Image (tube, rainbow, N blue to C red; front, side, top):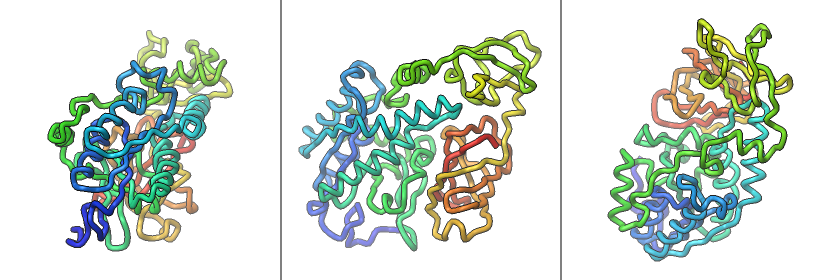
Length: 379
């Protein structure tokens, strides 16, 4: 739906100069472009960067969001574009809301997605409230997702660039949050367009590489972090088949994920084996043939629903779902159980569906994101 000509580009019926927008700045090119673009358009921009963990220990680690280098880069962009910039210490909040759960989920045999919890519990909760305290009309981020005005309310839609789409990580955005948030990059067709804008504005981060790993695990070694956070968590145990036969030993369940094939140390078998389940209590890594990874029925809880009708008013609904960020949406049937629980039936079985991952709902007839929930036990 096109914006009314009386509204500015952020959807407010007043001049940009009278519209305050807090921009969540990670120090990367995406959020920097958002801040620079809005500043150039004349908005009252306030940049905010979150210090999420000990950035002193991460100064030399490239590819880590919100580390010391990134805070410096965000501050420099604000200076270049002439708007105020603040750094907020969210270390305690981040540790309690994201890192602790990440460690405990891994210890429970799940495959957590901490970036979703960070958006849900820190950026779109505490930071959003801070933006309101600063009397901002809205908060903007550099996420690749679209906010569109529907007939009834603001809607969440996938990004125009499917390769950059971040809807999987933003499914838990509530309607109240969506009303306040803006995503100025969601309509861009490629990351090249973003970098071109960064060059246009003369930003020092124009050629900065994208972050690849979870911000607080910049080297990608999850098990090492969990051992540090939860001493004694890497206890050895047995690798067993589905009948309980011992095939080998392992150095800790936290080193394995459902669907894993490499690094099991049980070679010499006729057919390849995959991790099909983790039994934390028995310290067992259970392996089996690939077809045992196939799942069609997926139990979901902690559902966030963004559809137009009440979630429990429907018996079932044909939708598209994603059960991991790297896979395209697939056909499914959604069956509500309560306001926060449901079962999803996949039309084609997916392999490696694991507790701790998100299941995100999409409208099969449009780009709209209908919400989603968390996969909470093996199907």
